[in-house]
Image (cartoon, rainbow, N blue to C red; front, side):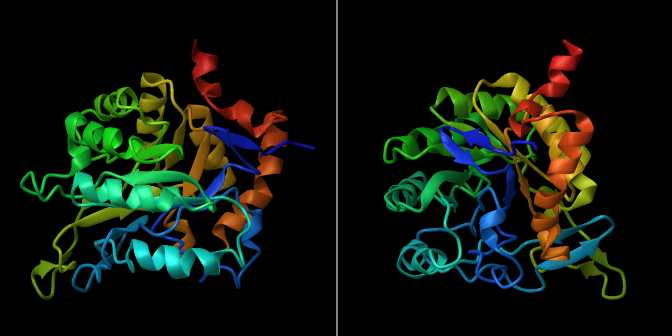
Length: 307
């Protein structure tokens, strides 16, 4: 028997498998496929202060070994999530959930995190800093160490829940942003968010996405995500949740060996709604083949082998 439990800032998960925000909604669409309580947790859909319809369509495009999305944080707003989604979630998910929060100003991040942090169901808050700062010419908060740190400091002032900052890979040095978040008080980090990409419709001679560019996710980005998880895990002393192209129990093990304490599964859920269930069920066999008795032992194992 193997022990799949892992810990994130005091929050104990039954296993390290977490559906990623934006690919699992609020869990309602997936509850009819399998018992969601087999998951370690899940990160619900990115939530902002006000309801958002999102970007114009088309906003999804296929590509080799992945997909592009420019959904634009479509969500019903923080009030509706607290009033409707969380009570409904109690009926089909009986573990602490991860609240993914977006914002377009430091004040909006603060407002949403303070509100959601009071909810008993929320085990930790994942703050998506890949949002444009409307007060700084639209540059993403996560594009600079200073911007990411400002959000981190502000959020930590208004909640006692663990705060994990979700980092963008679209930066020159992701370790600089990671260190800035750690110094500003982040309890942990999530990475990577999607890589910026685009496709062109040859017949119509224009970009496929109405937004021109979107976020690339899926198996194509796994090696890049793994490299960044490795770099960040070696640069900070706080836990890391790894994600990006994970679609198997073996890739979960790779992410953890690179330094992740838990792993999120994103685009794979859109290809196969049973993806996370299959990964959870396959993980004990992978650990057994590796001769590992506790999933938590995987974290940083590859680094230990090289030192």
